[in-house]
Figure 1 (cartoon, rainbow, N blue to C red):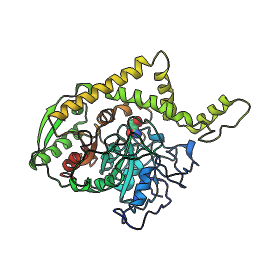
Figure 2: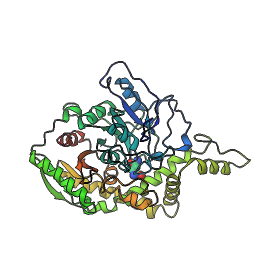
Figure 3: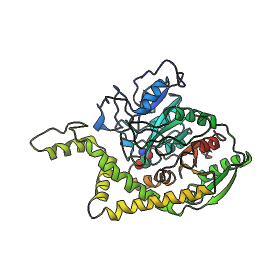
Figure 4: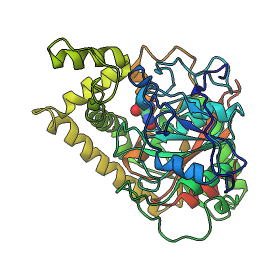
Length: 425
Ligand code: GLN
């Protein structure tokens, strides 16, 4: 175990004798199924759950020769931005004392930042790979929706999430993406990426000469001053290497956080219905009344944030409110997609700070969920639009806090964001 609580379970899973990751350890977020090794999702509900099969991404890691050193701590069911909602205790940020590591894949980013794993897998529904990568000073990629299999990923909000790599360098993240990407017969939403030259790792050549970068003004407006300063320093660095930038408008993004939370909570309320103590989860006992039994199991097994989201999601989907909330959120989602497509017509990639704030102090956010949700302003629009994005270290604030720079590319434009990001890290 690590002193910053990065792993929930530190059981080693050995991969094949050789392969592209034969000399690497790859930690796996604890919502990704591992055959024979418990997979808790950071929840008391699944404290003793041992999956009978491997997720496709885990199978691919093993085939590639990787050693999995353990399962990493996370916000319960991926619901959070600080990795403080885990039933197994909060994770500390190894790169910034007294601060949160970001979430929900906080354990994955922390073990990479601390050097306790070479690489890690996270999952990103609304920023859960990019946020902890930014807060811990490492690299994280959220792939295009459909590039990586979700088979064996315990679902939070299926239409938004992807599994992706976390690494100390862009090249390392790209090498891991090469192993996990590609169609899977077990996940009908996966597809073959359009034909392209070379591997993702080969795209990490740092060549940004002639690259056109769009900067969405809306994603800088509400951001912390120290973050914005560090962001522009990194942009100057890219410019000095031959890139150019111009401002772009994404008017729809002011509605993105609201739309994201309505959609994510709605899908979560449906996905989490299976945890009733009969099919999955701790038994709620049986005293002649099944409703009571389910209620007991869910009362005991779920934490506060999960309960809040199940209640709000159920409300948003209920007859009478469906059109007012869920349908409106879907309309906003379509508008966000269209805005990104237009902005990417005139730019190769879009750049913004990954998070509008530096890592928060520990213990500060839990009492104020709304402020925590608003911290996802720059990451959630990308999931609504199903696009790929990378977070690379942009530098540090004067107080020594890590700041991440997010680059967003067109669908299946992983090579573009990897190339651009590798000019910085
Ligand atoms: N912070 C966001 C949420 O709580 C993102 C989580 C994620 O990407 N899994 O929903």
